[in-house]
Image 1: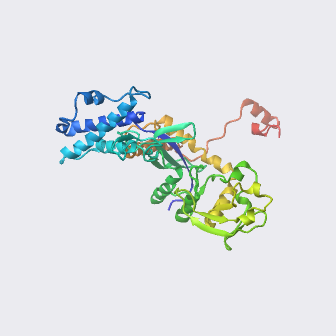
Image 2 (image 1 turned 120 degrees about the vertical axis):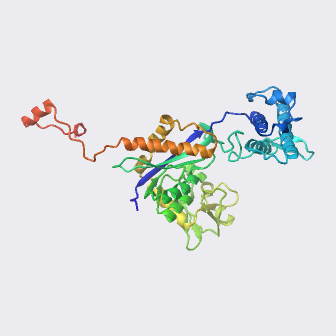
Length: 425
């Protein structure tokens, strides 16, 4: 059994090997890609389907730009061509098995078009028919695993995310122990259980796992401690209540929670009248929520009501179950000593070497499985470089010999400082 050490994890964005396409370009290129696929595998099926107009439309890669001429006409023409092609393959090719490009066209068609009650083809918008979420929306007919994501107002990309885990013991060489490649639309915290499961199979689990705020979900922190005895250290998201954000009034932490009596006491001594839940949440990274409710008769006469709630009814207080609440308190108390997180930031140097030293930022292959293979091979190369730079012997390097002036001072008994850092002390 290997001795457990401290490890750290961080992620970076990876660009898929695809071209930036507008929605109209995406549909048009998907039709062209499907036609190319049929022409390679069963060209006889194109007889009577591809005429002069479609030859001009799909005979070369699509370049329309953001402001093409006659956009509505092009949208309807591309949609009609897509429907006609898929119906033709279904009707006239009973022995033909559609390939990946035809399947990509079918998915793209569903995501960007719909038929109204009259059977007319319609272009989907956010207000008309609805658009698919970024976690499901295809961005290229040539790589259906790539996804679009935006982080804040600065970073946006189409592709994947790479999660790199390495050791960070102070007296040894840092070695990468795991690389995970996920969809760009996947939350960082959702990658944590997979990382721990793979490290457990290799008997490489850490004792403490240093991560940033993107990984610190209460659910996964508790799961890591329970299943793998791994302490995940990282800053938890702040209290989401309006009072905490504005630093005014009573926030959730000002209420006393009594789990044994299933009641909550407000700062003015009122005891909650209801205790409901825990309710499951829609996000896999969010903890279940217990809701304690106060009544209107308790909140309306309260002189601090404007500082407590803006609701016209009464105050509700939400919090996780006891085990997760205790864990939340411990982790937030530990956040008050951020020196430990400085060790985690060291992995940014490894990420930089991945991205700029080995070109990991851009995929050399299409598809998430091949992108992951590229990342694994890159990690092996980085480990080889790290280990080859380690000294063969473990002996400490000999001390630097004194200079001529230092020798003179020593011979005449004149004291001298051993380090410039001691000057002035």
